[in-house]
Image 1 (tube, rainbow, N blue to C red):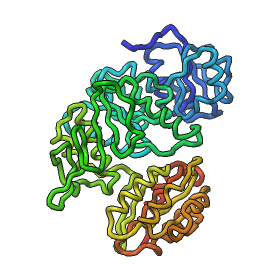
Image 2 (cartoon, helix red, strand yellow):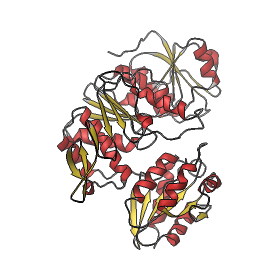
Image 3 (cartoon, rainbow, N blue to C red):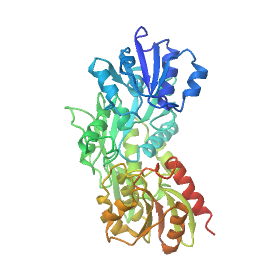
Length: 448
């Protein structure tokens, strides 16, 4: 039984991946709906016309009168709620909602909900693998991979969901079994008025949660908690009660829970302090829903990380090459620079630059000075990064990724690592961060 009134009229606003999942969901339940998109030729238009030719679809500038015919608008996360037509419809009493709100109303199994500026995809995937290792029928998706509504099934025992701030803006009551914000740093400042507004959007993930996980090293991740709310923490320090962290014994570093060592850090396939934090966050989330430690640790020992996320590319002449193209904001780049920098013998040669999305790059200066031999800059906002870095390290400006790779080879010494961690979006030069990462890996692999 679907928890949606079928006699009301809905409009799906945005016909991308999540919009198409909404179309399938509503059509399968016999709900009366239409579709609107600000683009003349949205990505899923051909699919909609082929599979649902009866659905009214309006492309181009949003028509407020048309939107006001609906009781509820399901707004794509790619479209800002501040869009004037949406605000005008809301002012006239139309409810603005989204696919995650609809998913939460209809999901019958517990939800593990994961957000944060960085590492969402790694932790979400890892928790999914831990649940599968424990024999759970688990569905993983949301902002990562499969859209939320396409995951709904009576067979699922556990949902592991990556959620973006944009998705959470239209989610009133998620009701997760356990929710976390892994970290908060400036991102999407082209869409938010400032860090406080972004922080508020992220913290909507805690609405209706039965348990929470927070990062002891980032005060902005800790929600205001009601009395008696079960609460777990993770961090790179020594853990205390209900905490996951690192303990050292006889010169060996261990992932630990409270006062118990779980496994040596050296057994992790994923490298860097930031990935140790990701492993601890995943353990905390899994433990909160009752996954056994033996299954979770077995998953950790085999997990090699995700593509474009501090992914090993190759070793050449004593230099290791890493693809962290997914680092599309300053916080993600900082995690890689500090995490990998602490984990190698030499220094980093960093490739950075692209579309900065209005970010302030000043926080890069000290970690770059401490961990990098040089920075190779490219893309639209390379001069903004150069200004922020000043004379911290030598800077080399290039006009292409191939040129960047050649410069890195010349700059790196044995024991160093070359790291593509741009701190920027890719759209000024590439189709997406995946293409940027693939072209980097190919150029690195082509080095003789």
